[in-house]
Length: 136
Image (cartoon, helix red, strand yellow):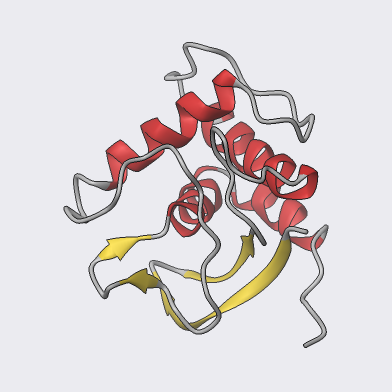
């Protein structure tokens, strides 16, 4: 289930973010809550730009081609500033206490949160408030 989390060291103005519990992408577990969280982040990102050629994905919680396209596109754009970012169309959960993988790659879910927060701080804060922190 998607949940709120906190970075150990805030980066780019992002300290709290929405994390997924399992991978989201073609052929992945695609748990409803995780996919819906990704779709809602994409909606904030795309809604604030004119790049939304495919439209905004509906937050159905079902992985679809539009969601997959935007995940891939967001990863490809992240690679411009973090060259070792993996571009595979898959959103991977951020392990507790980490913000990069291998110290060099950007987790797509973190990048999506940062873009959404910058694009529409109010909508991002409202979305973040919907998710609870794990009790463990």
